[in-house]
Image (cartoon, rainbow, N blue to C red; front, top):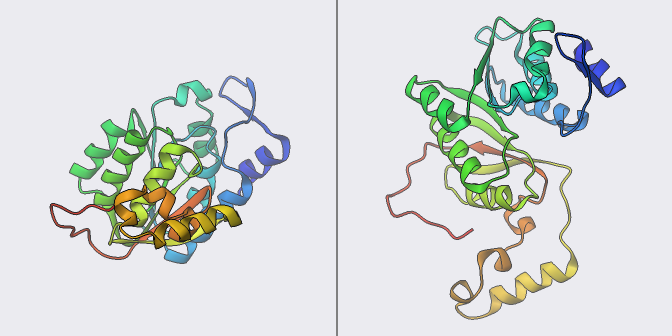
Length: 244
């Protein structure tokens, strides 16, 4: 682990360019940062993107994982970096990653279409931003256009309603498979039994919502942090739909 991230985790403090101190919160925990690094290393990623920068803890780990790659590039998107005191970008520069960091100040729905139109290709993407369903759905749509086959997208906060709905939807897309879970949760006996009973009912798909018929465990997305791997190009027909 790079020394800046190590010190932040040890002290729980960060500093902006003026020396003002902040106590960290709402950050990616160390074990989850290591989870991301493990994926990047396994798939030999060099072109990475992250939506949401904050204090830059996950960014520091991602950049450290790709810094030795010949074509390393890290795209960062955040509209509210000033709200975090500009600490995230400062930490990346102080760590020596400035040469391959491409920071984009703006909303993801503004930046991602531009990157897509520039034919950017991605090996890895981490989305840790808004929890609003249509916002993260838009993020996932554009990331899917840029993510190469074999690449991985990771979503955080999958236990929140909006992102949980998104991860259930993505898990059913034929071009994706659930790759890894960070600290998977377990489904209660009652919930598991209820889903089995409803699926046994004739025409259950017309009677019960998909979330009742299939638990997150059934779909393999029973975690707060879920990684999906792109296993083929997205070639769905115009009328493709799966309940989620």
